[in-house]
Length: 267
Image (tube, rainbow, N blue to C red; front, side, top):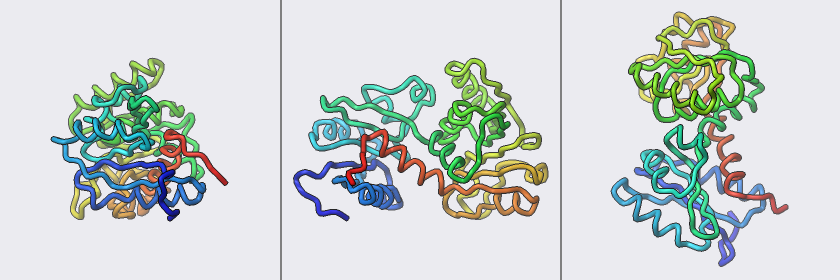
């Protein structure tokens, strides 16, 4: 890590709890590669104190921006001054830029990060059909990202159908020409199959879809990073499917977050 001086730009990550976050390591590595004089540190803020913490941070003249994770992604959006229409339709943000006048601009990069992670693995989604399990949390942003980057059709499958219908309506508000269906546990008939739920984080979790309907022509994708090999990916491999892990999404988000926050290569 570079030596911290009075010139060093400050960044933080907001979470509760905070001990498990990996973003400080990854972002500080990015700063080092770019020869950028900045440091990202963990900021532990509880939901009850989030508004107070943000109000103080906006007054820090050397603060460039914030990364935001669980459980603050939804609440932080309402506490910021500006956001894109898409970010407001998603209803959550995971990065906040502090403008020189102290205004806070929020943005959501989960969807773009997921798609860029796919692209980094050589998977072009334009014109492909996609099935997504989930309609909350990261699923909202991923659905918008898939449509934004040109899937021909998106099927949203969620245990609570009303949440899937709500997500569909919000996407169509921004992308009225999109082809979106509400699906079941059956992922067949799609090129891309995405688990955007938390099922698979814990051993013994139910599978997020009917894996017996998977076929060898499909690419099965995870958003879960730990464990790397989820039960879904293991089952998909047995069915002959290609698989895409969760880790590239974080790596791609680091690049996107740095771009949004104005981190330039100083080499």
